[in-house]
Length: 297
Image 1 (cartoon, rainbow, N blue to C red):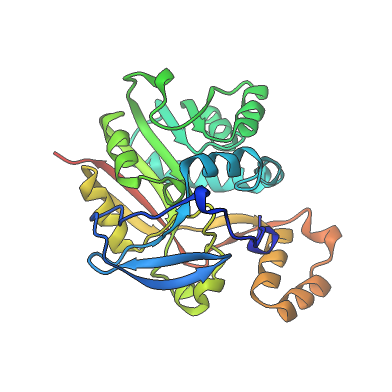
Image 2: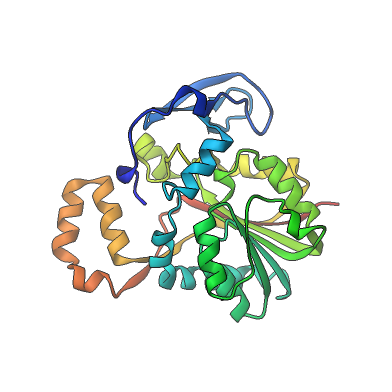
């Protein structure tokens, strides 16, 4: 869902909360960017960029379950190209651990769970969006509605815990990754991807960068922040690098239009609708970072 599709109205005062830095707990902050009526600040001590004031936990729950954030139909429509993306990502994960038990956090309508199951993983997913979980269940997938840690998981351990575009959405990323560490089997790995706020695209486009979505993206990590986050949660990075994904040409055309109306019009002429619905291509703008980590000793 594009930034342009989101409501511009300021949230009511009772729906927002002012927060300190999630990494270092410092309250020293300076204004960084504004978008959709929200202020993104930079921590003066560790440099993390985050939204403050931000939507409250209750307001965030409504955003997801009212289909305002990460809407289920969007991810169902992009599932063909997402399957190829997740094939690539699971291939990288399997360089570090064998297919066994996998937990997918922020599993959406279940595309990652499907691909993992086909590759021999016993997979379970968790997502806040109840509509997405209902769709995953309709496909016969093991999916739980709610937040992580989820009571139905108990003390289960997993050989891989995946977080595709997840960590920037959660109110307490250090707490979540600390729980991830507790749920890893000996030798198991955590995998995450998140927009890279230190990338060239982020610096060039500023508040117009496509990943600036302050109603749902609460944090904007750069690579130093991600390493710091892992260390605070007791995880040791094994690999870090730029992550691409498969995109339908229709999405590519829409993204170009968001950056430039002229580019969007040109793409519309060059990429007719009958063509873009059928084709998808690998895209890597070097503005998303992936990481694989293992519990530190």
